[in-house]
Length: 413
Image 1 (tube, helix red, strand yellow):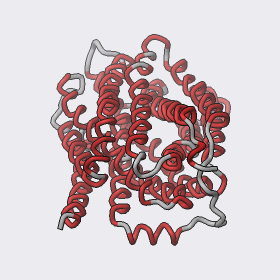
Image 2: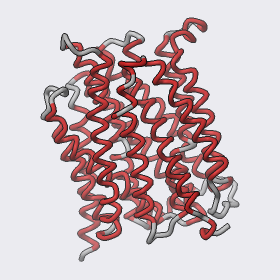
Image 3: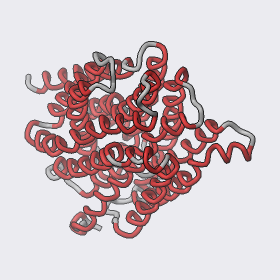
C-alpha cells in the first residue's frame, strides 16, 4: 500500500478520531477532582491524591507505550487504536460507580477509582501515540507541519470543548451523567478507527524492540534529543493546567460563601477552555512558523512563551480573578508550539520502518516527564502553594529552551 492510497476521507476520519480521543482523555481528567471531592476527599490531601492518581496512570503509560509503539510497527496502528478505545470505554462505564463497587468488594471508593483510572489508561495508551504516528505515515517532510497543525487543531478543539462546554454540565445534570459521556466517545472512536482508517507503513519484521537502532539515532541526531527533552518538559503542560487549576479552583471555593464546588469547577473549566481556545487559534500559525523558520526555532519560541505563562501564574493570588487569563494566554500560545514542533521534529527524523518504535520512545520520555512533574507538583501544591507547580513547570521549560538555543547557535556558525 502506498501513500497515494491515502484519501481525503481518511484524513477526515483521523481528524475526528483525534478530537474524540482528546475529548475522552481530557474529560476523564477534568472531572476527576470534582468526583473525588464528592467521595469525601479533603483539601489537605487533594493535591497529592489527584496528582498521585495521574502519576499512577502515567506509570501504566510508561510500562506500555514504548512496546505498543513497536507493536504498531509490527501489526499496524489501527488495531491497537480499536482495542484501546474499547478497553477505555468499558472501564469508563464502571468508573462513576466506584463507591458502589467499593462497597461490594470491601474497599474504599477512592481505591477503586485508582484501579479504574489505571485500566482506562492502558486503553488510551494504545490510542493517542498511534494518532501522531499515523499522521507521520500519511505525510512527508514537506506536508507534515501543515497536516500536523490540523491534527493539533483537532486536539485543541477536543480539549476546549470539554472545559468550555462539557465541564459546565455537572451543575445542571450531575457528575455521573458527565462521567458516562466518555463511554459514548470511546466506542465511537473504536468504530471509526476500525472501519475508516487505513495502514500505509511497511511492517517491521524484527521480533523484538529495536533498542539499538533508536539508541544510535539519538546519539547521531541532537535535534532528536531536543525533541525528546521537549517531550519530557512540555507533554505534562496541559495535564498540569487541567489537574492543578481545576483542583485549585474547587478547593479555593471552600473559602467563599457563595461559590459551590460545581460552580468553581465550571469557572475553572472556562479558564482551561480559554487556554485550549488559544491553542486552537494559534496552532495554524505555528504550523506556518515551523515550515517557514524551522522546527528548532519554533520549538525554542514555544518553550519561551510557555515558560513565561507558567511562571506568571505564580503572581496570581485569587484564581477567580480574571487576571489569570493573561498568563493563561501565554501558556496556550506556547503550548501550541510545544505540542506541534517536537512531534514534527521526531517524525521527520524517524525512519519509516521504526517510526512507531521511535515515537514509542518519544512518548515514553513524555510519560516520565508527566510522572516527574505531577509527583513534585502534587507535593508543591500541598506544602507550598497552589501556584508552585506552575512555577516549577515554567522554570523547566526555560531550561530546555536554553538547550534549544545552543543548537540554534551552533547551526548558525
